[in-house]
Length: 302
Image 1 (cartoon, helix red, strand yellow):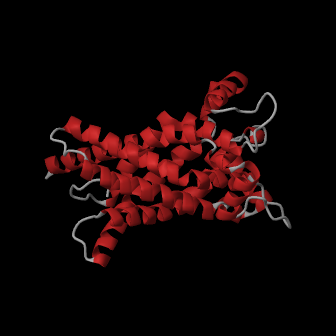
Image 2 (cartoon, rainbow, N blue to C red):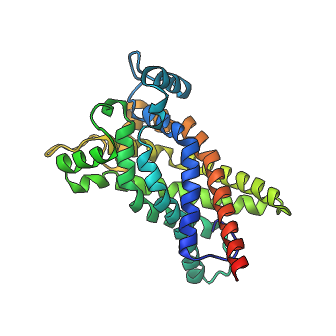
């Protein structure tokens, strides 16, 4: 659970998760665009438009396509953040209660935190897949002239590939979110046990930044290979009668490692960890702060 304080009704959790998610995405989204571009580049890349790394990708996007391109595709993530983050934190709370009852535990433990986070990640996956597919296709430079925006991606995907194509990459997304959330919530629990308990509001904020950043970083280390193949699976247009090169998660991991080397499974890692490390801290701080605000507001009404 993100906090040991008294739980609030689902509506408050939904709002707190939404505010935290949108705050994080507005600050960190350009790093997500860079991460996706680097991940979609197969092999070493060739030509003037090839990216040699994160900074090179930033510079070429801004120089060749304009600064606004760093925010292309942000509509889908913003619309996704409210249900996604609400699901993340609400599911983590609900699964935590379920597993504590199941195993007869009064409080959370390290192993329960990992199991709860993994279960919350699996739950969250079903919410995010269509939004992720739209975002990936809008971020890919090769698709820049193919789609006019989020709605156009949905219409063309459904028309050309069928309604189920909106859930391309579900299996890879499940693995990506299971691993990230297990690492994130498991580390938050462990770090909070290891660092001194905060005596002030400022101290609590610092602790949350540390715990959330460590959790986001570990989650990112665990799930980046699955994120690489998820991007490729979701960016592949389905053609009737043809088996896509990237289809299932773990075979796709093996394909990338065999053809491009193990390092290719960590393409985009630097922008991803720079986003989701501090981003995990932002999420936890904003979520905790908003939930504290809601508790104070309810207490004043009581």
